[in-house]
Image (cartoon, rainbow, N blue to C red):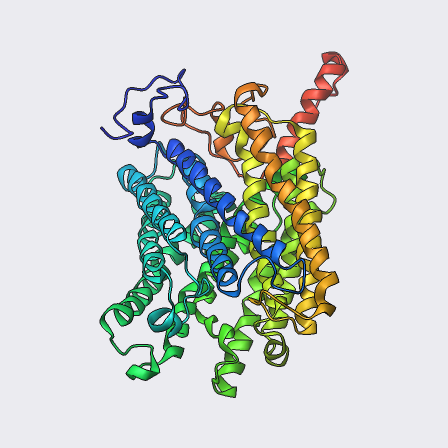
Length: 555
């Protein structure tokens, strides 16, 4: 039975229909599938965070006195694999995207509910394979699986992890395909492309990258596996192969994958800034177009990861210029978000704290990305902690801040419950402060020459590493707190109204939490960011409370 054919009672929300395990594991409801993903990615975030803790504990002292060199290799590899492939890539699309895309386009579900459930099962299988690899020895190649180390020489569970990433790619493709078809064919009547929320534009661009880019990395890992198992000479020079070919293929997907991780966060931030500034988003068309532009340009800048591989100066110059070009649509977003907040009626609720924190952290990540696109500087800091800091400012400071901001914004809609505002604000501040204490010292370490992926280092780098580890402790506390107060709110939180934030997009027109088929009555399609008009209506309503009818001037 499809989700569209189930009996419908608007008084029964999707959470309270049936709590049996079978009903959840066989559900075709996009909202419940979003919850399955939320639980799964939270588990993998905890696992990846545990490995991050081991890394920071090891780097407290210059000597490698906690982990052996081989164990350290496995720990940072497993941290990268889990965080990137099992958390960052699926987090916003699979959780918030699954929950919100049908609601925000006025549909009853995604286009292919069964494929939607299948994608979660595929993701779960991939996660189990990664966990199996971790408990049977781990993998020590780095999350990039560079050949010929991964295809020939590594003495670890490379194949098992490569198969997991290969399998996980199908989950990304199915989710992206589902969203593309849903957005194209299931929009509510009168919901034109020019009235789509910017979160939908971001998910549309992300889905394009997923569908077009994921097969490339899947085939690349398949070739590396064939070389490892069958001895084919594809990447190993000893067998007549070319290891640089692997890097070209890997980064052709993996740089667009950066935008799979960050584009959805851009969409979230657009919603938060408009809602909590009470202003129409500045430059709607430019922000929407920039999402698509980033998706396209992301496929032609991959080789900036490879400036030290011996490519020609001409090729390096071209990729350097293209990398700087992709900063333009990103800058358009940041400038327009800032303009939206300017002279707005800003409300400092928890989601807005995450949004403003995102702006600060992502701006640093973006600017240092332009620095790394400069050939001379990139060669100096390549494979140092400068790159580690840049990557985390974009991925953690960007993607995870966006994810947490989105979870806090739509939590009342997902659960029908409100969380503790004071504790959640403390948590957001801890995340921002802890993040900067953790990763800003790493810019200095990298510029001073500390290489990444080393478990021991010269003593002059210890003070900054101690700062970084202390910051990671604060950051960890900021991440742990939401698990407690959000879980508590599920059972004890105050009941949420349909639209606690006074937002304008149509998912707020349905009860919290939504009924099975999302809407009790067909949603009214309006401009998604017409806050000025809404503010005028609120002011008129307030005026009528205090002015007698005969005192209101005619006209």
